[in-house]
Amino acid sequence: MTRFWVCIAGAGFFLALLVLHSRFCASRLPPHLHLAFKISWRAEEILYRLDVDWPKYSEYFTGATFCVAVDSLNGLVYVAQRGDNIPKVLVFTEDGYFLRSWNYTVDTPHGIFAASTPQEKSVWITDVGSGFYGHTIKKYNSFGDLVQVLGTPGKKGTGLNPLQFDNPAELHVDDTGDIYIVDGDGGLNNRLIKLSQDFMILWLRGENGTGPAKFNIPHSVTVDSTGRVWVADRGNKRLQVFDKDTGDWLGEWKNCFSEEGPSAVRFTPDGKYVVVAQLNLSRLLILVAPPVGNIGDCSVVSTIQLADQVSPHLLDVSRETGAVYVAEIGAKQVQKYIPVNRYWKS
Image 1 (cartoon, rainbow, N blue to C red):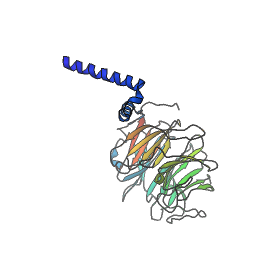
Image 2: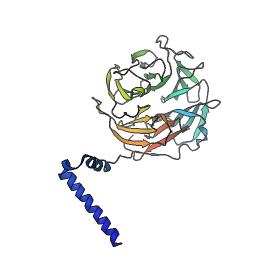
Image 3: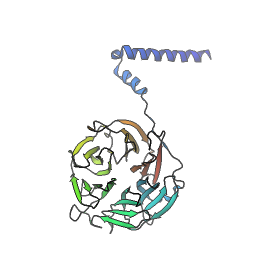
Image 4: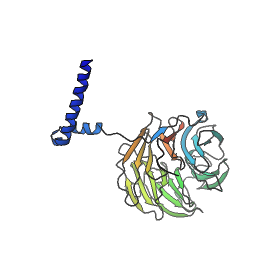
């Protein structure tokens, strides 16, 4: 027992010497020791934990779950999945109870967005299928009735009149009814389109390339509370940012994505954090959102490392609870992560 306490005391003494040496004689430390000491004391902030009780019954996931959308106004979660002879859209409550499913006119879903108002429950789906309803963006009510079709059903293309898509990846509908579309997921088009609520083109940005306002697989899109449009430019390993009114390019974030580009992007309800998915790394990044003005460089405040080959494809965040719902095509499920502490007020 005496030997044990001697060892503990010796370790504490050595650590104290190392702290003092680092503080007063840092320049004399060998570089590798100096760096190792600094890293060992750095801890990430834990912001989310897995909700193991969501959904209540996971057997409803019968295909590859490509996307998820949260209707915070009505407490609903929509999941779109791919596969043969299965329901393509599943509807859950935010508490995890299964409500219904539907399949009408859905071919191969890629992205989904819930855009409900007090008068209407609606959900939009981007369809990249090769069938009659492919290469379109479709609006449904909560029970799966088709309300609106954008694009030329069954025909991919680059045209603007009539409007054509090729593998439209995702969309965002803001509170004014304006629509932001990223088109496409490896198809003919690499562009960001803004439509008015009556579906007129307001502006368009992008072509294939690596420079500002050019894309290589624009995969996800969202709009922050300060009027900036954020695009996950997956193939170019960056987030690009645009002014939502003019379409002007405002900058990019690249330094957080040296290993892999972002496949999804969303903001937390308070606008404090940016939540990003990395598909092949099976990882979520929580980034510090920039203030109004210069977007600066991205900074990672927390990470959520998922199991290997889980493959988070797209995600959404509840405006009400701040919960993050992740569609995992590898694991064929949707998982829910809830804030450890509720860090904003409704």
